[in-house]
Amino acid sequence: MKELFNQYVQSLETYIMFAIGEEVARIKPELEAKGRSPISLSMGAPVAPPPQFVIDKLKEALDIKGIHSYSSPKGEAFYLEAIAKRMKTRFGVDLDPKKEIFSLIGSKEGIANLIRELINPTTNEFDRDIILIPDPGYASYKEMIKVSGGVGYSIPLTMGNNYMPDLDEIWENLKKDGYDEKKVKALLINYPNNPLGATATFEYFKEIVDFCKKHKILLISDAAYTDMYFDENNLPPSILQVEGAKDIAVEFFSFSKPYAMTGWRLGWICGNAEAISIFGKLKSTIDTGIFKALQKAAAEVINSKEGDEYIKEANLGFKKKQEIIAKGLKELGWAVENLPDATFYLWLPIPPRYKTSKEFTDDLMYKSGVVAVPGNAFGDCGEGFFRISIVCSDENLQEVIDRMKKDGFYF
Ligand SMILES: Cc1ncc(COP(=O)(O)O)c(C=O)c1O
Image (cartoon, rainbow, N blue to C red; front, top):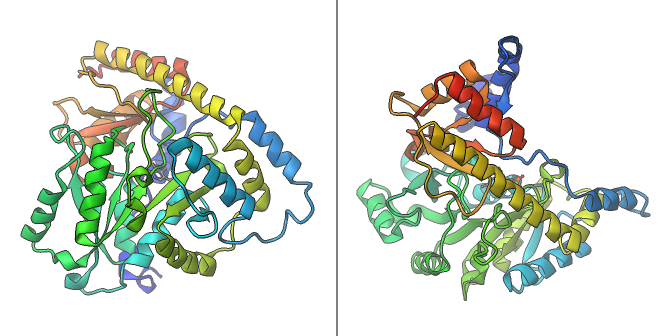
């Protein structure tokens, strides 16, 4: 059967988070028997329920006449208008809801579909289109590009470059590595970043826009974490705040993380009207929009006082969790100095006695039941690190530290 599938799909592995989930389910009884019931610090998904307000709105929406029929793939007008309003109040960005916003079944779907629209299908090794992607970066990017027949060329994000690398240097390296610069279709950025938690300055955003204009490539900004921040005076910006960004940029947003609505599968793409229009053609071929009741509830939460308060409370909660885990990790010998300003991730070096990230995360999981993600899952630059998501309860975070101490997981 396998040989019937296209050559790129054949080489796909099960997505890392699901592979970890399956392994945890397999070893769970064994871990429980030794008092090490699994604690997941792997999946980037809040465990708290969404705001009660949005759940109530969803229930109400179920009784609206006509709500159960097909929606437009683009999204209902009320959904798109609510998003336009949010983009204006949160970022000061003006968007035409008819032309510059399109609904998504979660941002992951949207990113995958945009990527396959950019890359020309080819099996010729030397003719593949290129998308520049952050490394480490969201594990799906590289695989999405690979199955579309393209090349995900790494932009190394390191502490040395403050996670804001010199893009001209990367362009030069690409040529030195033998790639044809004419094959580059897009630059994909993700600030605040998964897995690093790193943010970028607005100055850097301006440089990125200039860079994409200079090379005439699409700028794709994955803004899934812009509402998960810890400094109220320094909110993560949208790339569309940069003057003229709309000429070359599209940006992805999601309801998943800020409102703990991961299972609702709601997001949007916005920005350059031509790109959105082309994107819409494929989308309308593939799916037929989001259940209207979900759009209705989401449209209400996104501009509500309750929604904003929820985000504020959730971020305070994650800040507290950051402090609990950082204190514990310091006691274990980790030098945790600069905590991320955003996201619920912590990016940490593995203890030097381990040869690979996987060796460390496996040891931690099989001995202590603490489930983290090996850094190399996010790209080659992630080797030597691991990522934890601080989404579990405060008590479980403390339990993680206690187990690590008992089981000898000192740095
Ligand atoms: C950087 C980044 N982008 C996009 C997504 C996808 O989110 P969703 O499809 O739930 O909107 C995730 C999920 O973890 C992510 O970390």
